[in-house]
Image (cartoon, rainbow, N blue to C red):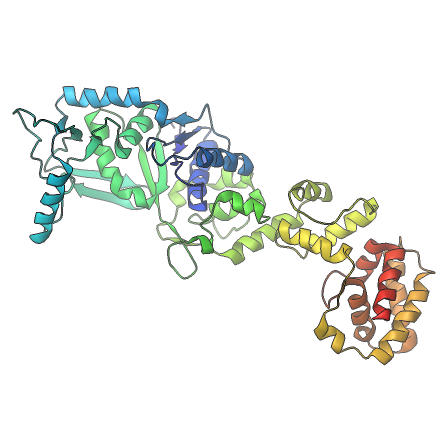
Length: 463
């Protein structure tokens, strides 16, 4: 098998979104799984729309998710001389030509064609032009598309695709200012970089016949193509920012782990048996672009949150502390190692994101200033207050380093008073945490320690 060479080639006109990252992941996996090469190319020839911040954000996103590319990043804006050379080559060989049609003329032609209910297209008027060029017109360069030929390519996702060249205009390969167009530079760079396989979104499917025209005109080897259907929202519509089509780095800020995001995106449009959870190593072992789905995939927040919760639960305390650094939460320095371990172990089981975990740390460590009204109103205060007074005194005799001792102290109250567990546990939970839900009570007592636990119970009794 020859060396697999893939690439990811975003335009830095906006931040990298998840559809782009998914494409990068597919290309990365295919190359790495076959000990091939994976390149990053920044398609920044549209100088008026380029953003340095967006280009940097693409690199930042790659670093975060751990996609390592080979060699240096290739910037198309630094390769204009190369493109000019190949444009001139096509002109010299009679495979391309100057077109002096003005914008006004082209617009007028299109209006005439629309009036005749024809598909608007260039009419090839300068294809074989031998006369004197009109003055004052900076020409564009058009490729001579062969006529009456069938372009056939076997797409790895769509199957066989056939296009008659008569359906393709003599499209522009260089604008009047000399800058090359998208399809031209993509073809040149893919060929010169030795790209063997192109995995990209199916919005590029219509570009492929044009690029094949260029490959043939320049006697370049045509790569294999895989056009992946787009990601839809759960209503089957195009993905919007509200439904997840945001900057990749937003996911880091929301508290998603890179492992979860990579796993989630890899499974959007690709499947392997009925397996859902994949480490990077497992993805490398299992991924094959032949298994890419031909139907659009659906973005599901529920699925992403489920995966993220899975990866969160499998982080050690030390790993969690590193991952939590960008987030704001209460100081942990007063906790001993056992309390810290217990806090994070308890909360990671109840959290779906790092951001949620940080909020839950505050919910435990910051003493409540008010109490959940719905739960508070249900309390039988005549019963509750004596129970909490008795438990507060009991705590003075309990070893707070022993969770089982704390649990026994709670059960002792329940058994001695002959009451249902909820009649005591609910008000105790309200006193300690200010609400009806949360971590287990023995965990809460252990984490808070004797002084803080007694202080919170006393404050609740005063209320």
